[in-house]
Image (cartoon, rainbow, N blue to C red; front, side, top):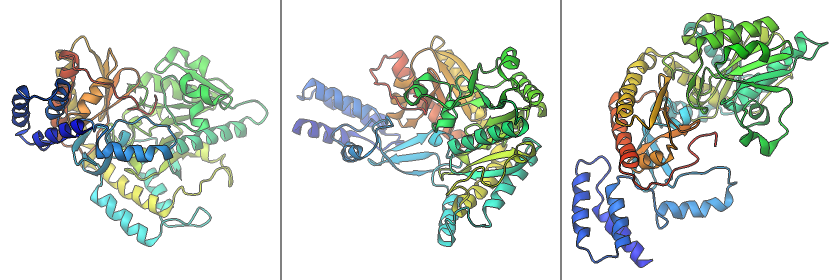
Length: 485
C-alpha cells in the first residue's frame, strides 16, 4: 500500500496541467528520472504510463474510486461506467473530481447542444425556479401553450412537416415515443372500428427507448428477452429496404416509426427513396408515419428537423423530440397533425410533470437558440472539419476504417474491430467520445463547438488511434458507452 501511494505521489509530482505546452517535456523528464530509479519495474511502468497521459483513468487509490465505492452499494446496477467522475462543465469541456479537463464530443448523448452550463439556460432556470416550477396539468399555465405554439411555428418556418398542428409536452424521449405509439393505436381504432388495425412497424438497428412500448419498437432480442413478452402487434423491417415496404405495412398497420438518422444503431442515414416509399404506403393504408428525431433533430443536421432536408413527399404525421430540447433539463414533445389530433380526446393520455412551467420556459429559450442562423448556418463548416480529419484517418488506417457516415454533427466512423480501446485511449488523453451500433465511433458534440475545438479533439483522437492500432498499446476497452449495450 505504501509503495502504491508513493508511486501516486511521484506520478503527481511529474504531472503537468492538461493543455500545458510543457506536458511533453515533463513526461520526458519523468522518463529520464525513472530510468535509473531503484523502484520495482512494475511501479516504474505504472508511473511511466501515468506521466505519459494527460488524464489517466483514476486508480483504485484515488479520491474518485473512494467516492464511487461509497455510492455504488445504494444504486441499482443498470449502468457500466468508466472510472472518472465528473462534477462540473463549461461549454464543450468537463472536469472530473480530480480537477482534470476533458473535451466533450458526446454532449451527454446529443443532449447538451448549447454546451455545458450555458449561461442563458442557467439564468432562465434560476428566474423561473423563483417564480413557479410546477402546477400539474390540472391547471393552465402561460408557458406550456407558448412552447407548443413555438414548436409548431418553428416546424413550419424551418421546412418541417407542413401539416404539424399541435404538440403534447412530456418529460423524455421514451415518453414522447410512448405518446406517439398510443396516438397511432387510437387513430387505428378510430378509423377502423370493425377491423383490426393495431399493428406497429419499426426497423432493425433502431432505438426508441426502454419503456415497454418503446422497447417493443426496438427490435433487439438482447434487450427485449429479459422483459418478454413485448407489447403485441409489433413488426420489424429492414432499414432502407424499399422493396419490402408494401408487404410490411398493411391494412392492419396503425403506425410506422422510423429515425431519419439512426443514432444508437450506427449513424445510419435514411435514403429519400425509403422515406418517400414509407410515406406513400402509410397514406395508402391509413397508417400514421412517425419520425423519431430525439437524437437527430433540433438543429443537429444543420436543419431544425432532420427530415426538413428531405422532399416534402416524405414528411410525417408525427415527430418526437427530447434530448437537445432541454439541454440537460428533462423534457420531450410529440408533435402531431390534425389527422392524428382529431382522434385524440380528453383523458386519452396525460403526464404529471410534462409541460411544467420550469421545463417549458427552459425549452422555449433553447428553441430560440437552436433555430437561429448563428447555430444552424455554422453546422456545415463544422461537419467539413470533422470529415477532413476522418478522411485523413481513413488514409492513415485504411484497413481499420471502413466508412464515414452521418450528416451535420451526428457522425459515425465505422471500424472493422471493436473501438472501445480507442474510447479509453482518447479519454485518457482528455477526449470523450462514445460508440454506437457495431464497431462504430459516434460523434455528437455540442452544436456550439468551435472549429478550433474540433481540431483539438481530432488531434487527440488521432493520437489515441495510433497508440491502439499502430503501437499496440494495451488498453482495456470501455463498455457502456452507448445506450444500446
